[in-house]
Image (cartoon, rainbow, N blue to C red; front, side, top):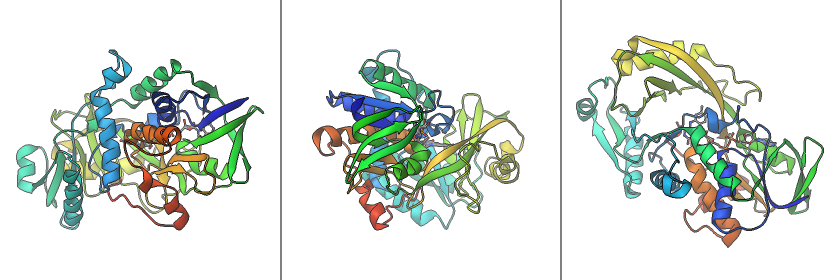
Length: 388
Ligand SMILES: Cc1cc2nc3c(=O)[nH]c(=O)nc-3n(C[C@H](O)[C@H](O)[C@H](O)COP(=O)(O)OP(=O)(O)OC[C@H]3O[C@@H](n4cnc5c(N)ncnc54)[C@H](O)[C@@H]3O)c2cc1C
C-alpha cells in the first residue's frame, strides 16, 4: 500500500496537519497512524489545555494568535455544535525583582504583536485581585483578553471528527521502522508486520518524536519529560482568577468548581522517564507546591487535593521550542515536534503551516522558518524564555 503522506502520531499535531492539508486542497492519499487510539498517554489529552500570548519570541506569539482566532470562530470552521469550552480567563505571570527585566522585555515583545497584556505593579495587582499576596512580587503581566483554557479532548475530537469527512485513513498501529534510501524516506513499517510506502513522512509523535526520527537515522533532541497536574478543592471560589504563574514556576488556575496546579519540577533528576511511567509525584504537591500556593493566595492554606495525573512533555532539550519543517538533507521527512509545553495551543497554526509548505512550497500564514531543523543541525538555540 502506498500513501502520498504518512503522518506518524494522530493526536492534535498529526490531526491538525491532516486537517489543513485537505483545507489547502491537497487531494492525494493521507494515512494518520496512531498506536494509542484512545489517547490514554498522549500529551494532548493529559495537558493543562491553556493558551497564552505571553511568550518571549514573536513567532510563538503569532502561532498562539492563529489558534486564538480559530477558537473565536470555531462554529464557523467546525459547525454549530462545535464547543471546546474556551474560557478567556487570562494569564497572570508574576515576577520578583530578579525577573522584572525579563517580564518587561517579554511584555514589549507581546504588545508589539498586538497582544492585550498589561504590566502592573504590586499595588495595581492587589486592587485587581484582592485575594493575591504580593509578597516578594514587583510586577505581573496580565492578559486581559486572548488567553485562557479549554477542553483538550474536545478540541482533538473536533479535528478527528472533521477528518472523517475528508478522506484520511486512520490506521491504529505502532510505527516500528522507517525505510530510507539516501536522502529520501520511502516508507514505514508497522508493528503488525505491514509496510506502507510513503511520498512524505510527517513526524507528529509528540514525546516519542526523538525515537521516531532515529528510525530514519536522524537526530532530534526531543525526549519525554514527566509533568504532574494536581486537582484540588477550596472553599473560596475566585471567579476572576486567571492562570497565575508564581516566580517559582508553580502555576494554578480554576477549572469549573475546582483548581488545577503544577509546575516547578526539580531540575535535578529531570530527565526522560521510562515510557510507561505516569506515576504521580505526590510529595511534589505536599512539599513544594502547596506551601507556595498558600503564600501567594492565603486562602489556599486550607485546600483539599482530590486527584492528580502525570503526562509527558514533548521536550526539546536544545531550546524548549518547536522544530518545524523538513530535514535539510532528507527533504521528505518533516518535523512538527518539541513544543515543550505549548504544543496544544500551537498545533492548529503548525498544522496549517506544514500544509502550506507541502501544498504551496512555502509558509503563507505564519512564517515558521525560524523553527526549522537547521538550527538543530548547527546546535544554535532559538530559546523561548517563558516556558511554563
Ligand atoms: C502536563 C502537561 C501540561 C501541558 N499543558 C499545556 C498547555 O497548557 N498548553 C499547551 O499548549 N500545551 C500544553 N502541554 C503540551 C501539549 O500537550 C503538547 O505539546 C501537545 O499536545 C503535543 O501534541 P502532539 O500531537 O505532538 O503529541 P501527543 O499528544 O503526545 O501525540 C503524539 C501521538 O503520537 C503517537 N505515537 C508516538 N509514537 C508513535 C509511533 N511510533 N507509532 C504510532 N503512533 C505513535 C502517540 O501515541 C501519541 O498519541 C502540556 C503537556 C503536558 C504533559
